[in-house]
Length: 203
Ligand SMILES: Cc1cc2nc3c(=O)[nH]c(=O)nc-3n(C[C@H](O)[C@H](O)[C@H](O)COP(=O)(O)O)c2cc1C
Image 1 (cartoon, rainbow, N blue to C red):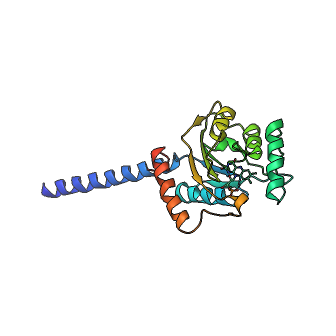
Image 2 (cartoon, protein in one colour):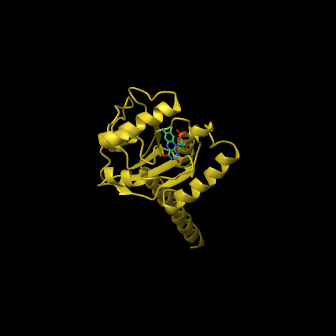
Image 3 (cartoon, helix red, strand yellow):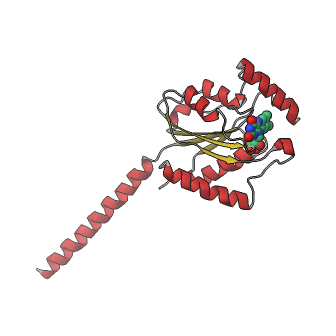
C-alpha cells in the first residue's frame, strides 16, 4: 500500500515536470519576432539600438542610403532642410527581407531639424508595418524629439504605437560625436531597461 502511494507521488512529479517543460517551450515558441531598424550618422542612435538588442534580442538593421549624405555637417543640415521642405524621400540601399515575419519593430533615429530624418520617412513609406507593434527611440543634440514621434504615428496609422524612448546623444555642430559611451552608456542601459519594462517588452 505504502509503495503504491510512493509510486503515485513519483508519477505526479514526473507528469508535473513534463507539463512545466512543455509550457516553457510553448512560451519561447510564442515569443515575438523583433526587428530593430535605426538610422545613425555619428553612432549615438546605433549605441542605443545595440543596447536594446542586447536586452530583447532580434535583428538589428542600419538604414543606409543609395546616395549617402555629405561628410560636412553644415552641407548635410542644408540638404536635410530642403528635403524636409519638399517632402523628398531618399532611396534606401538597405533592403529588409520579409518584413511580414516580424511582430515588433523598433525604429530608431536622431532628431534632424526638429523632424524625423528623411531616410526614416522613406523606410516608413516603403514598408508596411500594419498590425505590428511599433516602438520609436531617439537621440538628439539636446532639443528633444521635435515632431519625430508624431510623424512615426502618422506614417504607421494601422500599427500599435508604444511609448518611445529619447535621450540626449551627441552634438556634431559642437564637435561632440559619440556621447553614449563609457559611464553614459551604462546609465543609458539602466534607463532603457526601465522603459522596456514599462512598455512590457521586458519582464
Ligand atoms: C543634419 C542634422 C540635424 C540635426 N538637427 C538637430 C535638431 O534639430 N535638434 C537636436 O536636438 N539635435 C539635432 N542634431 C543632433 C543629433 O540629433 C544628435 O547629435 C544625435 O545624437 C545624433 O545621432 P547619431 O549619432 O545616431 O547620428 C542634428 C544633427 C544633424 C546631423
